[in-house]
Image 1 (cartoon, rainbow, N blue to C red):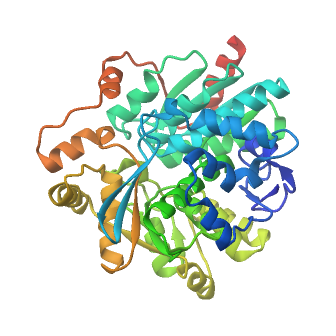
Image 2: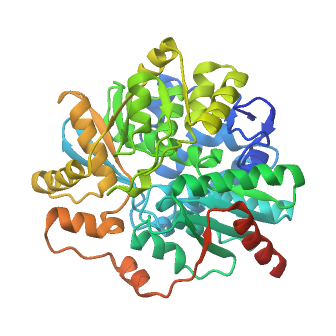
Length: 464
């Protein structure tokens, strides 16, 4: 399997280099030159596999190469999705015959990001030892990515990690999961700005580094293809748990950076019977607005009760544009226009094609709280605010007889105050969370300036 950039100037790259690069050298995102197809007959054979065996069958064509053999990749997957991942790797709650919640918070940091970032960490560890190289990981987080990356990728002594998060705009638990970790090769950085500012700093660092190659940078955000790959697996797993007749099913996905829902799109391209992918947003409704009029227009990100989606630049949407436009120069032109003018528009015909695969909606904070309460009252299930956003929009856009899976992206305790205020019942943190809240924090605070984060990296690397 070879990969190429969405912008056309970094082509035919093998999997390991794609993983190590993260962002393509021309500033684009890597996509596979060809998406492997799984036949209906093969899908039937996959239905009864364990999570580990299913992961291997679904993703091996993307990964196995001269540097990673089939046997080595199997062992990496077994190491990733073992009991160490959590007491229960994954499960589904059935609400009724047509509605299911896919619980993706069983990993070490109680968030869906663990499925991909534990895999990425073990792949890094394997390759860095094999190639005897060091890596500097730089990442931005709106909440869950940072801790999942730290818990997944810092295990390798050949890695130095820098995680940027927006000052005052992640929950206390999310922040403390990062800032109390205590590994010497991890530096947490609070940025005076929003998530989009943090993400731009990361991209600017990569672009600046491309010219000088001063550091061996790698990315852990969903711009890294392995992030998408690790999320494809649970679309297949959940489908087989809710559908036996190979009838297409809808997936309802709360999303900000478009990575999770793009993994669903890749699953569909591979042959998984998915009907519609429902893209769910909060008041930061850039994606909803695009689906309504074909214009992607950046506005100021606003704080909400679902902070992981407080985003105005959905990086992975570039991969979707690449798929539909099939012209890398056009993709590059649109992204450049977004960078310079803050918006771009696509032709009506292209939007029509996209809407055959996707639908989108946004929801207010008050409606989010209502949905948390409704799910608890009706099913005695406690959900986090992001899952509540998805539930609200799924109920709004889909008919009652349309089968759907709601992706539950985080454990409610990561947003304890919001859930507590919504339900007004006695809630307790899981034991691991309680321990984290008591620990001492360590992090730096900087202005939203590339020179400041570069200085932080320089000082740390020089010391090591």
